[in-house]
Image (cartoon, rainbow, N blue to C red):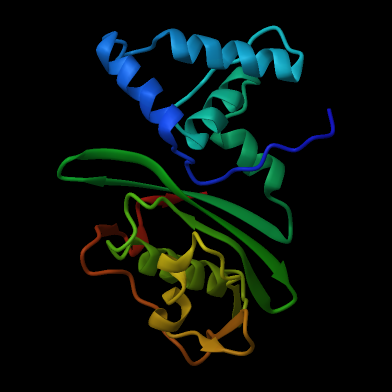
Length: 207
């Protein structure tokens, strides 16, 4: 199969509205119904596979795929870590409960520079200053391995606008349209006062 299926915004027309009303009228609201069964069959036929499973989000699909092939958090860290790259997972808890893993940090070390390859945070917790503490953790870790400069890359897309001001807000200097620099010899990055930090290490972030 060579035809690629692109991710796109919902395309809801009159036909989709009729299907939605039909689902309501037939009382197939939860958990599943004939439309989901038909969708799974259509996908399996299109891909020429025995079975297909419809899920509520791409995140759930990735989670299930990793469970099926028995890949866990530790496996990812072991596979990615080397003498020049590091992977960290980020989890959080608040008064409402455990949010689980809500972010990922991938760092690539090149000489005395730490390149922030990936700084990923769930939209569920953006704006709670967790991202600020993630940068503070990166700075502290980089100093421990004797790195003197952080390099952040931000490539603007339609979906990452909420993160567009992160590097600017935490004190990075813009070097070019997509490159942001921080001098660890001159700059200090602090954890958010709203987050619990035990022993001066953010306890939500672990390698």
